[in-house]
Image (cartoon, rainbow, N blue to C red; front, side, top):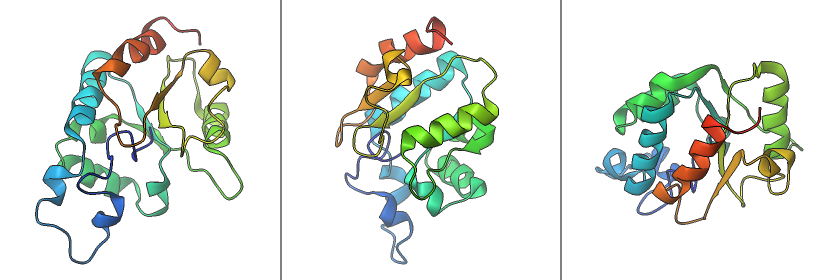
Length: 162
């Protein structure tokens, strides 16, 4: 799961606000886009998937930072759902697709999967095998994850090909 343009659309706050010494008082109440937060919680409630982070925020935070952030922002279920191998960072010269494939090669055990990303940061995902198998949900920049994505998420997590 990516963060930017999935659950954090930058309105009114974005990731950089987290690391500002003069944080807005309501940052933790308004960091996540409400429709995106609801859609993500619906997915977690319905399917109980393990979450693997693919976001650029991995350069700025460790697991405990993500867990704390999710708990402070009403996404306790995300914190509790982080996979034991919780991160798939894109190292220098890697696309997001490369990072996800590297993670899958090392950790995948056949469970259903879905990738939540966007075209801007989800480099290499459009047209990939994962995309062609219906495993990538592309969220629109500035809009984020929403209930309209849930049918595709359900197909990926219920009956899609492994």
